[in-house]
Length: 433
Image (cartoon, rainbow, N blue to C red; front, top):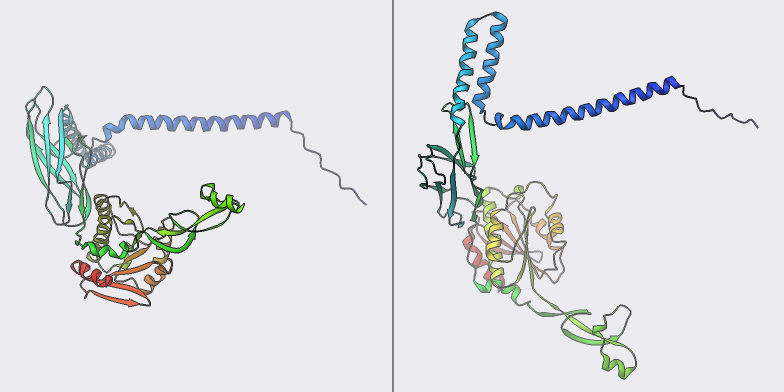
């Protein structure tokens, strides 16, 4: 049997060790130098950024044109380009005068009211006051409102004087409209340099969805379940059912001591579970399930109408969408969150997957209302219905803008097809019958 000789480790010479140490030191020094360079570069950028922010797009274009003109003049010796570059730089120097100066404004933005229904009128007021001891020159103010920007020319103000500007807020569609921040703009007429100062924080205007007023009886679907005693036996409730022998793990507070003393064996109480009504609205906001934006808005209005009536009747409520679980503590909080609903796009593969994920941490509902667009197949409503127990009442609201509103039953599922929000109260009364 032959023995394989083990290879002895190679000894490193002193010269090789010194070379490796040198390369390691060079590498460490290069990395340290690179870190210091980037830190210095960041500090330099922070130092010059306030200056570069003042230069507008037109200003950068003038600077580039001046540099190109100087380059052409240096290469070809054309004096005309030298004069051109000098003129462009002189324009920038003149523009510097317009960005200097300190303003002492006190600006306030007020919206009246802060909450409106889509289509109602909303006005805003911007008050600009001179809080300093010196007079101020005229200035231009910019106020972003939603997707647009309102521009106001504020005249010169003496000390302690103010100026008011009114503006209309577009409220044709449900949304959360942000007004502000108000900024003052200093600069030349050509827009080469532009210095802005922010004076206020943004202010929100909630444009609530249009809702239908439902009769109190419309919530009777869940009111009859309030406090209903079920057949399910539990160890903790208020409806006494029977006694049974103690088992390890039972709470001592449920021990019936008189019976235990009489029988010589520990006996504990059993209860019948009392169901408190819980209503869950599963509202799909998947863009591909709605034929148009107006149909999507009709779906939001239907959801808000149902939820508002349930909240007014004091029934526990949960409203879920793909991107948001709405606050349901008060009607105002629900409507505010309804204004924030935006169409989702491809977040879930199916309606069932969305409903399962959104209701996983919620209490078992007494009634489930499913809301979807006209492009959602009826089979998808049935798939969502199978997620809940047989004791749960399920209503499907199929939003089909412009169609004939109707009530039908498909495989035991009540389907309410809505083409107009005004038909919702009438159809709900028919469901109760």
